[in-house]
Image 1 (cartoon, rainbow, N blue to C red):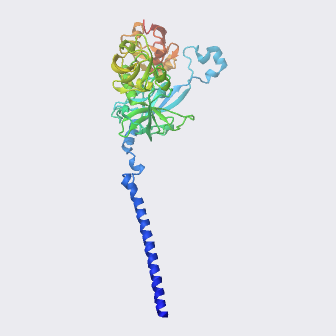
Image 2 (image 1 turned 60 degrees about the vertical axis):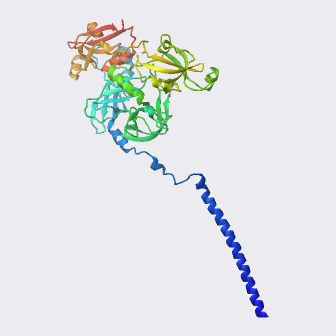
Image 3 (image 1 turned 135 degrees about the vertical axis):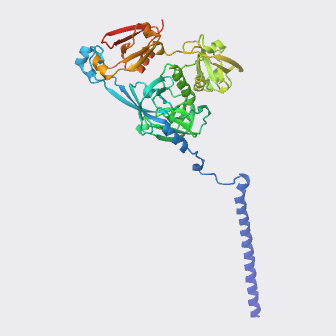
Length: 492
């Protein structure tokens, strides 16, 4: 009997263990199935197939663009006369000769003080033409260009445009490495670009960033007809970068670096470049005409915002609003009226004043453009013949050219012999204002309108500030030692 009880007890324990094992296994299988389903579900509904590539793998290869650019970007150093000097601070000196020595006797050799400046430039053809910023070379009496291989050249100014902050200079060199112009209008937000220049005199510096915005106006250009439509990037730009290259991943010149947004004077996150669409046209005008051929619509315009759209019942926030058309201006002559909204120029949409100005800046006086205009909710098309700053369609001739002369520097020996500090000599005369006034070849111009002259750029500066209807006073000396002066008007 005891043996039977032991066997029954053992069977009961075994049976109970089997039941427990089955229950545990069943629960484990259920949990395992649930876990597997949970892991498979995302792949079925998110189309997830593989981990994304690392950010580094997505970056473009900028090495070739950088290598090409550094050989085409130059370091520019300038020397300019200071506005003041030790002699000018002497009260006794001022008592006899007036402020800044305006009444000094001829031949008095006062040693001028000089200040130095620096910036960057971009070689744009093999013959030595270099684009830079106007503010880099504007007041310079001497411009030195240092290439990436450390060769040095003295540059001459071909022309400059304060309205866009672009200038063109040239060095006497051949077979130079240069950058080709790219299409700045096709740049996209987020596209990678390189800024190449010489910040803080650190030559051949390359930084990278993306295009942060386009057609940006920041109110820093102080010309008579300022044109701002900057490319904004986050590529690091610092003092000394001005005039340097903004290039795309293909190594094409898409902008000329000009400014930074900063409260400290150093890079704070944003930099601005004149787009190639503007810079290239300015350079071509300066090279061909000596002066920018600015085309004008003859309108006063403003951006369309929510308040304007509601108050003028414009419906949609788009285009550029025409506040006023100027009398005899190109727009009025074509039929455009106040309260019209310009939507596009030759099919290119414009939604800000800067965008419209950038589109018109590509053309010269006499060119025709097609404007898409919204008037009282209806779309209309107008063909506008653009005009120049004088209100006609002619190419504007550089005031300097009408002088009719070729000029050259004065040797140190002649300066010493004639007891003059500066001047520029007339080497040849053609038909023009100088010849009509009786000036002879060899005459040395020392002053124009009481401003000292030591370079062609000084003459251009005086003429740009002079009124066409007021007399120009030219003073100087002949090699014989005879002092004389001439007076003429730019326009009769």
